[in-house]
Amino acid sequence: MTQSRTSATFAPPVMEARRWLAGVDHPADRPLLNVSQAAPVDPPPAPLRQAMADIVLNDADAHLYGPVLGLPALRAEVATQWSASYGGTVTADQVAITSGCNQAFAAAIATLCTEGDEVIIPVPYYFNHRMWLDMSGVKTVPLLTAGGMIPQAADAASLITAKTRAIALVSPNNPCGVEYPAETLHAFRDLARAHGIALIVDETYRDFDSRSGAPHDLFADPAWDDTLIQLYSFSKAYRLTGHRVGAVVASPARLAEIEKFLDTVTICPNQLGQRAALWGMQNLGEWLAGERLEILDRRAAIEENFHLLADKGWELLGCGAYFAYVKHPFAMSSADLAPLLVKEAGVLLLPGTMFMPDDVPGGDSQLRIAFANIDRAGVQTLFNRLSLLEL
Image (cartoon, rainbow, N blue to C red; front, top):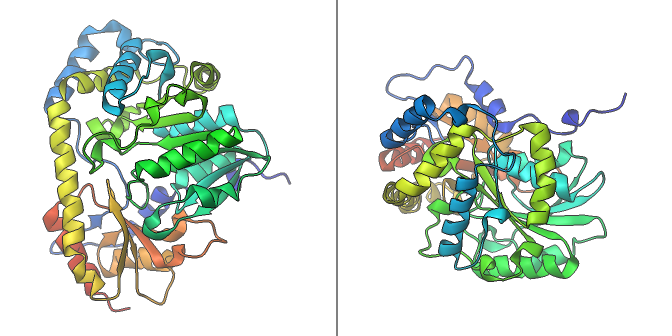
């Protein structure tokens, strides 16, 4: 029997992890610490919710079909703010709005690849990227990362074949949290351009980058859109996860192809979510800056308190944005350890095996901690629980 496209890939990791909670009781003095998912659990801030309520009541167009590539005002706002923040030139016709950043990736791949093509992705990878490539009949080519979980363009060069269509990077990285240096992104851009392939850079977590100023100047290149495809999510910045609003920034020619995909899948992005994202961009700059500082403080708490685990043989492999990526000291696979932690420590997190191909070593000793929804006290509680494990 012919294998379906969906059966060619694995089950959604976050949904799989939630099943580990079934039948497990968490006493009042040790409530579950859920550090499995990289998404805000709080609703949008009150002023944004009020604006959204006003839109629902008073903006009739918010309930109708809209342009396939997104609300013109939101596309223009992204172009204006990106041009300013990256020190380059991005125009509204180089921006499309999508139903979340995952759809932006799916749409980009749909325009780049056909059956049997290849995309190079650093490992550990963001699992939804691997899932979409599997379901598209595209081969994932793993790129091993060097020290500090930073991939090297020179290593990627040896993986390029006649079937390679793109290199896909995530910075700040999911699952490792690390921020790719500007020179790293430049090297990958130059490599991709030399081979006539695309460089996809997913910057979902750009709003929580620890560096002041632009993390790179790829948009300052007047010809950036011959190679670069940037992806973005409004979900993390404005807590709009349930409204599914993302963006893809690319050449107008690429977006014309993406329009075909989007029109077939969702027809148009969520109209309320788009208006909420626009209102957030225009009114919540100061609030978002505060959110960034809070995430950076939680990152600092991870680094400052990690000695509690380091003393027990754990290693911090990467940290930043919403994530800490760690190596555990136990003589068992992380695939077995992660569900055991629900029972033994009241902790839900994801094993490194969910971010690695089966034939690439390393994932069995690694774990991802998504710390965006635990504060400093929560970080210390987490590390105390993990440090007391005896397995």
